[in-house]
Length: 120
Image (cartoon, rainbow, N blue to C red):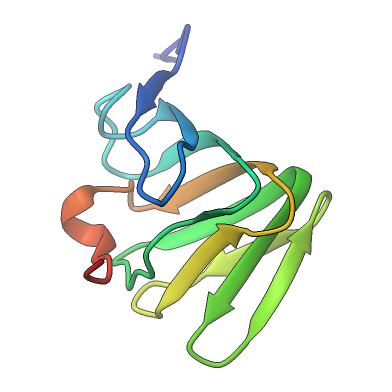
């Protein structure tokens, strides 16, 4: 049977500035552990701690520009582009010059126990 998700749940975001995370599918909003789908809005100047997650994260930028830093490189992901962060690899997201609106899908679902953020 299909599950109709009528609205997301806003969840707390990490980082130096307020960022809006609306989880549609995941551990919080739908009690789903296999995957999570969230709509993100981050302001210009936002940066979150680096992380080494135990999940793959698929991100599609809808508007603005998301800056991605890995252990080996840094690059920007513009509107209409995507990035895959692979399980077990260090990554850091930010929006230093302009805000960004994007969709993030985590497999398995995002959890505070498996994101493994750097100490601030």
